[in-house]
Length: 118
Image 1 (cartoon, rainbow, N blue to C red):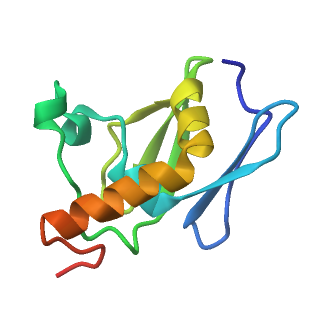
Image 2 (spheres, rainbow, N blue to C red):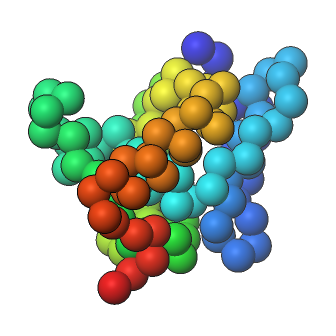
């Protein structure tokens, strides 16, 4: 997967716009990136260990750091910063944004969790 030609964080730090060469830009909310982080803290080491992360509606992006030429590390204002977002994973999130988001919202409802902090 080729590197994006642009990564842009909105002024309010709640949205990451990613542009891959020859494609339309994709906007990914900070909340989505945080709750679907590829980190072991969120994904676990197997599907059974994956964690549903509630209460991140107001999370913002504080830093984006390059990782080699294949990924970025995104740090959020809740101090989560262990996820390595590869170009392939960011592309997948963009392509399946609605379905991935709906699955997350459904999972929250199933578990009686909220997007808001309690």
